[in-house]
Image 1 (cartoon, helix red, strand yellow):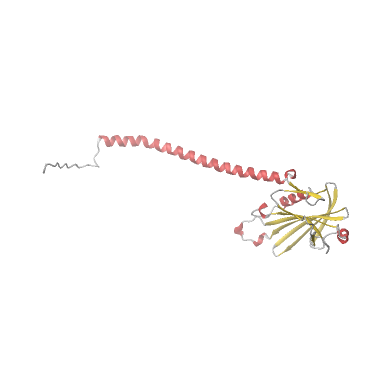
Image 2: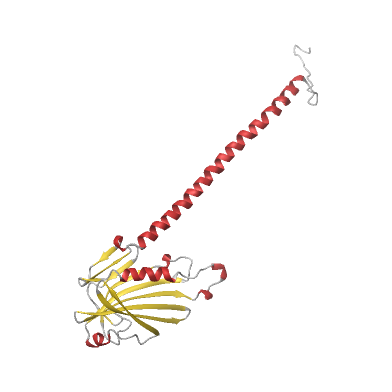
Length: 246
């Protein structure tokens, strides 16, 4: 004791084995496996939940694709256009369409216009997104008509451009001549199908063109796949198949 104060010197020996250090070591030895097991179970549950979420996302995406496929193959659920007053045609509602309500004359009302004028009454566009990650560019379907004497006379004649093949078919009780042609240029490919018929002294042409690009022109890193020609052609044929005279 110095000046009324106590000085206590305590030396802790950390490397000295005591009864309580043995007890702590024993407790840790017993507890650590249980702690590891508990957190391992929690981790497993977390992985299972994340895996389930991933499976749900994949299932939802697959279901969405199946529903879209069913929609595109079911014309009964499509939008119907009757704005021309002379015909109706149905189409998937997510495709862009244009109606020529003013019946403005046009020189490109048909691929077989032969220099005549007519009316491109209806236009539908299938966007590139319909066939993503492919060389598909777009597809366009039009309904044109002309009462011009030359147009009527040449209505059922083959096109004068590109290679052409012909056939016949019946759409909702009306006979149509069908012409297939193809063309290419600047790395682009165009496949056109034209359905033509004479009705009430007027030539009607329902035509669609599938536009794609030369897949060889793209770098391999783009990983583009060839477009599904059957898929797009089948869809366009279904749209044509809804055409009806009013």
